[in-house]
Image 1: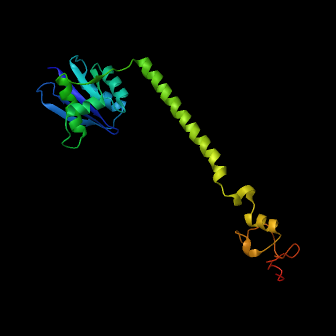
Image 2 (image 1 turned 120 degrees about the horizontal axis):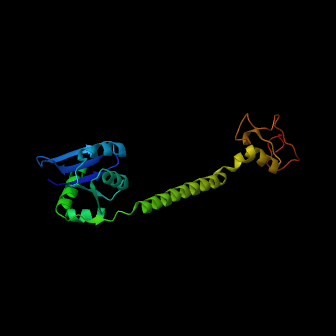
Length: 208
Protein backbone atom coordinates (compact mmCIF):
# COMPACT_ATOMS: atom_id res chain seq x y z
CA UNK A 1 0.00 0.00 0.00
CA UNK A 2 1.27 3.51 -0.72
CA UNK A 3 2.71 5.51 2.18
CA UNK A 4 2.04 9.21 2.76
CA UNK A 5 3.68 10.59 5.89
CA UNK A 6 4.59 13.82 7.58
CA UNK A 7 7.85 15.13 9.04
CA UNK A 8 7.69 17.89 11.63
CA UNK A 9 11.12 19.54 11.82
CA UNK A 10 12.53 20.83 15.09
CA UNK A 11 15.97 21.93 16.14
CA UNK A 12 16.73 18.83 18.23
CA UNK A 13 14.48 16.20 16.67
CA UNK A 14 12.33 15.36 13.66
CA UNK A 15 8.92 13.89 14.45
CA UNK A 16 7.59 11.42 11.87
CA UNK A 17 4.07 10.16 11.32
CA UNK A 18 3.25 7.60 8.61
CA UNK A 19 1.11 4.46 8.14
CA UNK A 20 2.83 1.11 8.46
CA UNK A 21 3.96 -0.75 5.37
CA UNK A 22 2.10 -3.99 6.25
CA UNK A 23 -0.81 -3.38 8.61
CA UNK A 24 -1.38 0.28 7.80
CA UNK A 25 -1.22 1.18 11.48
CA UNK A 26 0.10 4.70 12.00
CA UNK A 27 3.63 4.84 13.33
CA UNK A 28 4.91 7.84 15.24
CA UNK A 29 8.30 8.62 16.67
CA UNK A 30 11.31 10.90 16.58
CA UNK A 31 14.63 11.02 14.79
CA UNK A 32 17.09 12.25 17.41
CA UNK A 33 19.33 14.14 17.00
CA UNK A 34 18.11 16.00 13.96
CA UNK A 35 21.01 15.71 11.50
CA UNK A 36 21.76 14.18 8.13
CA UNK A 37 23.34 10.95 9.40
CA UNK A 38 20.47 9.92 11.65
CA UNK A 39 17.83 10.95 9.11
CA UNK A 40 19.61 8.98 6.38
CA UNK A 41 19.73 5.90 8.59
CA UNK A 42 16.02 6.20 9.36
CA UNK A 43 15.07 6.58 5.69
CA UNK A 44 16.91 3.35 4.84
CA UNK A 45 13.78 1.39 5.80
CA UNK A 46 12.05 2.66 2.64
CA UNK A 47 14.81 1.51 0.30
CA UNK A 48 13.47 -0.05 -2.88
CA UNK A 49 9.96 1.40 -2.65
CA UNK A 50 8.63 3.93 -5.14
CA UNK A 51 5.27 4.60 -3.50
CA UNK A 52 6.48 6.57 -0.47
CA UNK A 53 6.01 10.31 -0.04
CA UNK A 54 6.67 12.58 2.91
CA UNK A 55 5.60 16.16 3.56
CA UNK A 56 7.77 18.54 5.60
CA UNK A 57 7.17 22.08 6.73
CA UNK A 58 9.11 24.83 4.99
CA UNK A 59 10.75 26.07 8.19
CA UNK A 60 14.36 26.27 9.32
CA UNK A 61 16.20 23.08 8.36
CA UNK A 62 13.93 22.06 5.50
CA UNK A 63 16.72 21.97 2.95
CA UNK A 64 18.77 19.11 4.35
CA UNK A 65 15.58 17.17 5.14
CA UNK A 66 14.32 17.54 1.57
CA UNK A 67 17.73 16.59 0.15
CA UNK A 68 18.02 13.45 2.27
CA UNK A 69 14.45 12.38 1.54
CA UNK A 70 14.98 12.80 -2.20
CA UNK A 71 18.34 11.00 -2.04
CA UNK A 72 16.62 8.00 -0.42
CA UNK A 73 14.25 7.69 -3.38
CA UNK A 74 11.28 9.09 -1.47
CA UNK A 75 9.07 11.84 -2.87
CA UNK A 76 9.60 15.04 -0.88
CA UNK A 77 6.82 17.63 -0.58
CA UNK A 78 7.46 21.02 1.00
CA UNK A 79 4.52 22.70 2.76
CA UNK A 80 4.14 26.43 3.30
CA UNK A 81 4.08 27.17 7.06
CA UNK A 82 1.46 29.93 6.88
CA UNK A 83 -0.98 28.05 4.63
CA UNK A 84 -0.48 24.90 6.68
CA UNK A 85 -1.43 26.77 9.85
CA UNK A 86 -4.54 28.15 8.13
CA UNK A 87 -5.55 24.66 7.03
CA UNK A 88 -5.28 23.53 10.65
CA UNK A 89 -8.27 25.69 11.51
CA UNK A 90 -9.04 27.32 14.81
CA UNK A 91 -6.45 26.57 17.45
CA UNK A 92 -7.85 24.41 20.25
CA UNK A 93 -4.67 23.07 21.82
CA UNK A 94 -0.94 23.68 21.87
CA UNK A 95 0.93 22.57 18.76
CA UNK A 96 3.44 19.78 19.30
CA UNK A 97 5.66 17.70 17.03
CA UNK A 98 3.17 14.83 17.20
CA UNK A 99 0.21 16.92 16.09
CA UNK A 100 2.32 18.68 13.45
CA UNK A 101 3.40 15.42 11.84
CA UNK A 102 -0.14 14.06 11.87
CA UNK A 103 -1.49 17.26 10.32
CA UNK A 104 1.04 17.14 7.48
CA UNK A 105 0.28 13.47 6.85
CA UNK A 106 -3.47 14.09 6.66
CA UNK A 107 -3.04 17.03 4.29
CA UNK A 108 -0.74 15.05 2.00
CA UNK A 109 -2.98 11.97 2.00
CA UNK A 110 -6.06 14.08 1.28
CA UNK A 111 -4.40 16.06 -1.53
CA UNK A 112 -4.82 19.35 0.35
CA UNK A 113 -1.18 20.08 1.13
CA UNK A 114 -0.25 23.72 0.32
CA UNK A 115 3.01 22.94 -1.45
CA UNK A 116 5.96 25.23 -2.02
CA UNK A 117 8.32 25.02 -4.93
CA UNK A 118 11.71 23.54 -4.10
CA UNK A 119 14.37 25.54 -6.02
CA UNK A 120 17.02 23.73 -8.08
CA UNK A 121 20.34 22.86 -6.51
CA UNK A 122 22.25 25.69 -8.17
CA UNK A 123 19.75 28.22 -6.84
CA UNK A 124 20.07 26.80 -3.34
CA UNK A 125 23.87 26.98 -3.53
CA UNK A 126 23.77 30.60 -4.69
CA UNK A 127 21.31 31.45 -1.92
CA UNK A 128 23.52 29.81 0.70
CA UNK A 129 26.54 31.72 -0.62
CA UNK A 130 24.71 35.04 -0.37
CA UNK A 131 23.50 34.23 3.15
CA UNK A 132 27.07 33.43 4.21
CA UNK A 133 28.33 36.68 2.69
CA UNK A 134 25.59 38.61 4.49
CA UNK A 135 26.52 37.00 7.83
CA UNK A 136 30.21 37.79 7.32
CA UNK A 137 29.45 41.41 6.47
CA UNK A 138 27.20 41.76 9.51
CA UNK A 139 29.92 40.33 11.76
CA UNK A 140 32.55 42.63 10.25
CA UNK A 141 30.32 45.67 10.76
CA UNK A 142 29.64 44.71 14.37
CA UNK A 143 33.36 44.31 15.12
CA UNK A 144 34.19 47.63 13.44
CA UNK A 145 31.52 49.43 15.45
CA UNK A 146 32.83 47.84 18.64
CA UNK A 147 36.40 48.93 17.93
CA UNK A 148 35.24 52.48 17.24
CA UNK A 149 33.07 52.64 20.33
CA UNK A 150 35.70 51.57 22.87
CA UNK A 151 37.84 54.75 22.75
CA UNK A 152 34.74 56.94 22.96
CA UNK A 153 33.43 55.07 25.99
CA UNK A 154 36.77 54.91 27.81
CA UNK A 155 36.99 57.32 30.78
CA UNK A 156 39.20 60.28 30.13
CA UNK A 157 41.16 59.69 33.33
CA UNK A 158 42.70 56.55 31.83
CA UNK A 159 43.84 58.25 28.61
CA UNK A 160 47.55 57.64 27.98
CA UNK A 161 47.79 55.92 31.37
CA UNK A 162 48.06 59.18 33.34
CA UNK A 163 46.32 60.23 36.51
CA UNK A 164 43.46 62.67 35.93
CA UNK A 165 43.96 64.23 39.33
CA UNK A 166 47.59 64.94 38.46
CA UNK A 167 46.57 66.80 35.32
CA UNK A 168 43.98 68.72 37.30
CA UNK A 169 46.62 69.78 39.88
CA UNK A 170 48.98 70.84 37.09
CA UNK A 171 46.27 73.08 35.61
CA UNK A 172 45.45 74.80 38.90
CA UNK A 173 49.01 74.84 40.30
CA UNK A 174 48.08 72.89 43.46
CA UNK A 175 49.50 69.64 44.77
CA UNK A 176 47.17 68.05 47.33
CA UNK A 177 47.34 64.42 48.45
CA UNK A 178 43.58 64.19 48.86
CA UNK A 179 42.92 65.03 45.24
CA UNK A 180 44.44 61.92 43.67
CA UNK A 181 42.00 59.14 42.83
CA UNK A 182 44.83 56.59 42.96
CA UNK A 183 46.39 57.02 46.42
CA UNK A 184 49.85 55.52 46.68
CA UNK A 185 50.07 54.91 42.94
CA UNK A 186 50.31 58.45 41.55
CA UNK A 187 53.51 59.35 39.74
CA UNK A 188 53.84 62.62 41.67
CA UNK A 189 56.17 61.72 44.61
CA UNK A 190 55.87 63.19 48.09
CA UNK A 191 56.30 65.57 49.84
CA UNK A 192 53.08 67.29 48.89
CA UNK A 193 53.66 71.00 48.81
CA UNK A 194 52.42 74.00 46.92
CA UNK A 195 54.64 74.32 43.84
CA UNK A 196 53.64 77.76 42.75
CA UNK A 197 52.69 81.17 43.95
CA UNK A 198 50.00 81.41 46.55
CA UNK A 199 46.44 81.30 45.30
CA UNK A 200 43.22 81.92 47.18
CA UNK A 201 41.95 78.70 48.71
CA UNK A 202 45.33 76.93 48.77
CA UNK A 203 45.65 74.85 51.94
CA UNK A 204 48.62 72.65 50.97
CA UNK A 205 51.26 74.96 52.36
CA UNK A 206 49.25 76.23 55.26
CA UNK A 207 49.03 79.79 54.00
CA UNK A 208 45.54 79.54 52.48
